Amino acid sequence: MRLGFLQALLLGAALSLGLAGSIAAFETTGREAILIDDTTGAVLMEKNADQLMPPSSMSKIMTVYMVFERLRDGSIKLTDELPISERAWRMQGSKMFVDVNSRVSVDALLHGVIVQSGNDATVALAEGLGGTEEAFAARMTERAHELGMTNSTFLNASGWPQEGHLTTARDLATLASHMIHDFPEFYPLFAETEYEYNGISQGNRNPLLYKNVGADGLKTGHTEEAGYGLTASAVRDGRRLILVVNGLGDVNTRSEETERLLDWGFRETTNYALIKADEPVVDADVWHGDTETVPLVLAEPLVVTLTREARAGMTVKVIYDGPLPAPIAKGTQVGRIVVSAPGYTDVEHPLLAGTDVGTLSTLRRLLAAAVYLVRGGGG
Image (cartoon, rainbow, N blue to C red; front, top):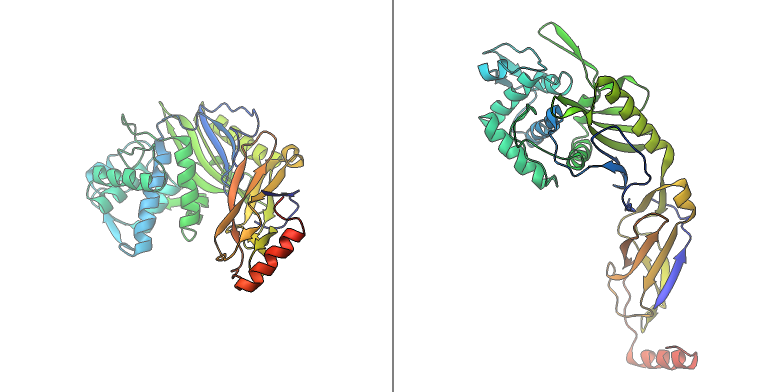
């Protein structure tokens, strides 16, 4: 067994070091919460993150995702107009104030959902694309499961209170990451702070958009059962965090607590780029090969999210059985790299051969074996 130790001051960037629970005992007044580094997927803090909960208007993120998919595949256009049914028009709660029996563009309806949180606009989109809101919601659930949101069940498009309409904080964080990365051309809509329709101007309910915290989305939510919630994302110095909090007591607490959690995440944790993709991590000895060594590499760059204290105790260990017998095809897994840090679960990733290695001729193999034995190999 060949062991190599790297003290990890290497360069690079995007596999993740997972956490043993949360980074620290950092409390929140939210009933459910999760804070994630979007690059590494590291969970910075969590509280009841897998507890089923009513998502209220945060459900609309899933509705918008479905609409964006239809725009992407060309089956609808932003200029297409959808009819406003009496059912959509009668929706209570937050409204875009569309007129019954009118037709409204997809673009306007999206603004009505994202900026104004309009339940009427949400139902109009669901009916226009799904035939009925119920059919659209069934597809929302199916698509959510495909995205990895395995604990989510959507029974309507708006998040209007309905028994069995449930998700989790972790699932909403997964959805937020998909929204950001899958639709970069549309995601900026979530940062718009104001939209006017029918002569009525309304501001975005996301309180973080009005603060100097780097926020650029996503969606608030509130019902009596759910409390006040927010799925949010912010970027500082090129680093993105995703936050989901639900079950807060009022709008002021939602504003203050979400800002506090993001500040803590950015302040107390850092991303450390360790190894670039295809950058040689170590040169492994080769047995009977046409080269004496082969570089071992990672298929993806390696980045870890740590507190500064944990970074001081981090170690990176390379493990492989050597010498490696030839022939070796480039890309073959021949070892593993293990990252350890105090308070964190060890994470390992496969090490691959960075080049092809051929075999020696029979005569050269015999000579190599003789040299190996003379040098005391095998012990």
